[in-house]
Image (cartoon, rainbow over all chains, first blue to last red; front, side, top):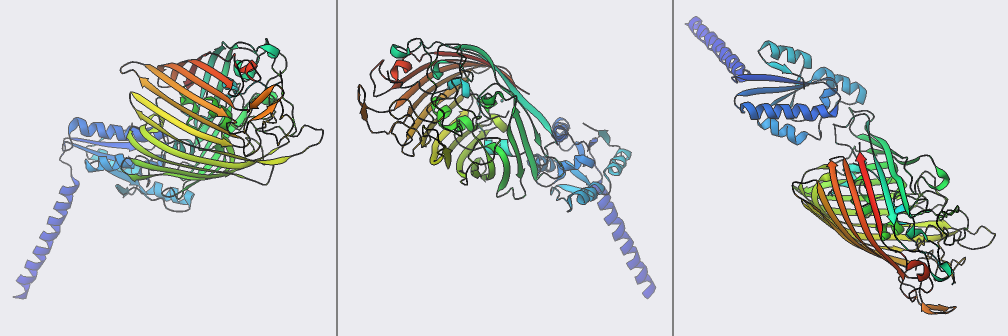
Length: 148
Length: 466
C-alpha cells in the first residue's frame, strides 16, 4: 500500500519540476518575430546615446510585442548601466517597453578592482556571467547581433 | 580744462574677456554646464573651443575744447585702443574637459586657454593665458558638489553664461565696468591723458589681465530638481579675489553667493528653453596704492557687487533683464589704473572723485530681447542699457564748476541681427547707439568735452564653436 503512494508522490514531484521548468523556459523564450541583441563595449560616450536610439527605433519599427531587444554592456560600455547614468530615464523608459539590459559580471569585477568598491548598477540591469558569452548564446538562439 | 578725463568704458576692448562654453537664444543651467559633466557618459578628454573673428568701427567724434582732436577709450577699439576701426580675433579659446577616469563619474575637470587678443591676454603682451583649470567632486551629487581651481564666478547672467553663446558683440557698460574687473596695478600709476589716434602710448594703464569674472578658490554648488520641471541652483564660493593666474596678495578672501530658480520648458544643454530668475552677491577686499607719491602705500578697500535678474527663453522669443549695483573700487577707465579720476581727486584716495572708497557706488540696468524668425536662420536682437557710475556722491565746487559730482551716465541702444549658419556657427551684426555724459556738467564742459563725442559703433562678428 505504501509503494503506490510513494510512486504517486514521485510522479507528482517530477511533474511539478517539469511544469516549473516549462514555465521558466516559456518565460525566457521570446515569441517575437524579430530578436536583436545590441552590443555596447565602446568607451565613446556618444555610443551610449546611439545604442539607446537604436533600441528605441527597433521598438518603434516592429512594435513592442513583435521585437525582442536585449542590450549587453561589457568592457568600457558597462558605464551605460552604472547607477546614476545621465541616460537613466531613457533606460527606464525602454525597460518599460520590454528592452532588457544585461551587465557583464567580469567587467563589474574589473571595475571593482580599479575603483576599490563594486560599482552600483542601474536597477534595470541584470548581471550575466560574461557579456560576450551572453551575446554568443543569444546569437545561437537566433538573435541578430548589432553593434552600433 | 581740468583734465577731467576721459570716461571709461573700455567697451569693446576689454569686453573681450569672458568665459566660455558651447552655442543661441538660450538660457541654461550654467552652474552644471560649466562645472560638471553628464554623469556616466563623459569621455576622458573632450577637446572643444571657439573662435570669434570681428570687425568694429566706431563713429565717435574727438574731444572738444582743451581735448580737441583727442580720443578717449570709449571711442576706440580695444584692447589696444589705438584705432576707431579694426579687425580683431577677439576670442580664440581651446580647452579640454571630461573625466580622467571614465569609470568613476564622480570626478570631472575643465581646462581652457585663451589665445585671442583681449583684456585677458593683452596686458603684458601675453601669448596665451589660462582662464579655467578646475576639478569637480560629485560624490554627494544629490546634495552638493565641490569645485576647486580657477573658474567662473556665478554672478550676472550676461557675464556668467558661456560667452561663445552671448547674443551681442560687446558687453553692456555696466557689466564691462563693474564685473569685468580690472586688477589694480601694484603701485600708484598716473592717469593716461586722451591721445590722438595711432598713439604709441597705450591708453590701457593696467598691467595685469582682467579677472575675467573668474577666481581661484573653492565652490560648493549644485542644481536640484525640486519638482518635475522646476530647478533650484545655488553656489557658495570663496576665492583669492586677485584675478587669474596669480596667488593672493592679502589675507582676505572674496565671498560669492548665487541662487537661481528655473522653470524648465523644453530641451537641455546650453540651448534649453526655460525661465530663470536669479540673485547674486559678491564681496571682498582689494589692495591698492591710490596715493600719488613716491612711497608704496597699499591700502585695503572694500569691494561689493550684487544684482538680480531674469531670463525667459521660449522660442521664438527671448527676454532678459538685469539690475546690479557696485560699491567700492569703482573702475574709472582703462586709463586710470589707480581708480582716481583726474581733477580734484587725483592722487587722493579719500577724495569724492575717487572710485576706491566703499561709498563710491554705481548702478547698472539692462533689458534685452531676441526673436528667432520661425523657419529661418535669422534672429533679431534689441538691447537697452543704462549705467550710472559714481551716482551717489555729494556735489562739490572746484575751479569754474559749481555743485558738480563725478557721476557719469552711459546709455546704449543696440540693434542686433544674427544669422545662424549652422548650430555651431553664426554671424552677429550689432549697431549700437551710445551716449555718455557727466550729468552735472554742462555740455562741452569738464568731462563732457571728452564724453560728448561718444557715438555709434558698428560691429560684425563671426563665431565658430568646435
